[in-house]
Length: 385
Image (tube, rainbow, N blue to C red; front, side, top):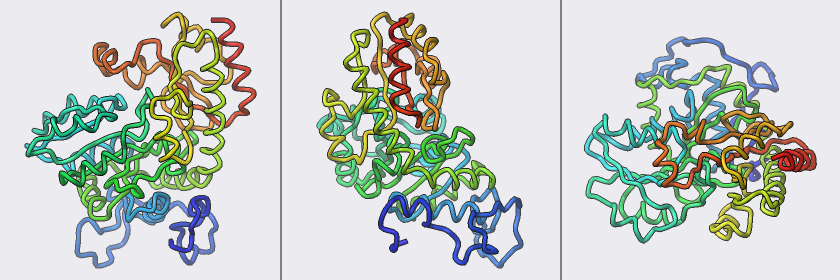
């Protein structure tokens, strides 16, 4: 792993089997549920699909760990499988969690609705107000959870303060790095204990599988694996193969998306029918300087609001020709959605309003279409609003 210094080289070569299996340049699919017993002393070491340790899993996990310069990685059946299993590994009955207030809707629902059934309590914190976090700290607080860029408002919390606070108070620090991807930000390099991804998005990049990833300190990843082994959130070998293949183009995809998203955000910010644009690459973004300092790129995600509210938003989404109106993100095609009706529909209207997620907010996942074509399409759609 040490011989590969650059991310783009790691994407292709890190973790690959040596020697290549039967000379195959592409990693073969080991479509076998079970493998011959090899004298393993530990249950969690027996080679079995549900234990996420077949040849396809192991090669993929080595590559993913290398991308963030981490000790270990683990794949799971979905991003939520990775998130929930990681939280249920570092938290037990009687423990307390600090979590960023604005989160992906599925994570928010798990924290607010499900954790209590496990006897786990929580408090929300404002990601950009580290001076207020200590007031929420309790003797039983065990972990702190944030997102690199919040979904869907693209806020950038004080990530350096999160790591410092976690170390000072002996907390496990967890971060959802899906929006940034390892191209733009690598949490283990900055001291985070666990970095989580919905690999459905940028890591795979082709909108054809659902998968999750846990990356970080080896002893914690091993604990998450043991919990996942029992919860059953395994990733199928064919999905491993597709993720393995998809991640190899991560660098070229994400850097192109960075450029196109910035151009689109700048266009929208100057348009008279647009009242608000959320994108950390804009100088007007409240955490722009932090994003410049920490990130290698500002990502392919943005959100915005139009003058005219929900009706204008729906008209715009109907008028665009290139983007597909669909949930999820991070693929090669541009997607548009209203989070209030998709990713954050499980939240109450009151919670969404409190966080600033209006019913008219449009989230855009910029694909790899030509930027000029996207800009022209957005321009014609806005003209018809």
